[in-house]
Image 1: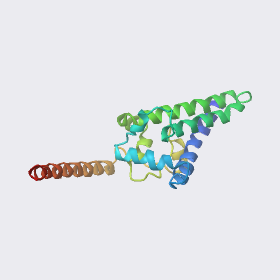
Image 2 (image 1 turned 135 degrees about the horizontal axis):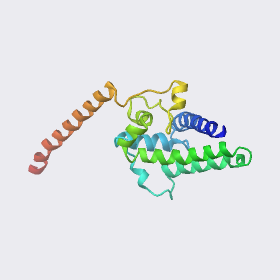
Image 3 (image 1 turned 90 degrees about the vertical axis):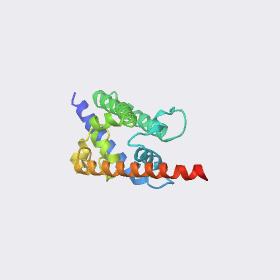
Image 4 (image 1 turned 180 degrees about the vertical axis):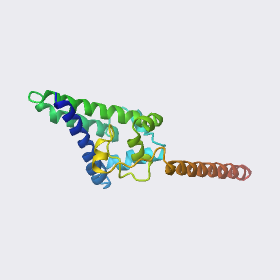
Length: 185
């Protein structure tokens, strides 16, 4: 039975390591296989207030979400040989890979849910430091490694939201002011 908590801790450590070193570390290089995360997923999420519209696509294709799903399936498959000797550990790892995809996808389809239930992941994308809060499902290893940085509900978030609202209002006003000129031309 000790395999269950060990599997959950192991999977959370894996989230942290893979996210930090592969998806962000190597992923910043456009030539890297891992670039889909930084250059597609992060851009979409920052542009669309934590929504990644690409999660509406089918997994049948070669894009960020299918690469994420393939990585998770391969991670689960790599652990299957342990099933006969460590069934509870392996079960926890398999559960963790399935849960990762499920909650990650939901968080980028429902930002309100993410802000309430996966605050640390919301903070990872929407906060000023996208090189923090590496865990998705639980913040355990971020707290252990000192990379947990709260953002949602802070004074900084309130100021950022006010700034975004001012910019949106200004853009609307400029668009409205430009419309009569375009019509008269």
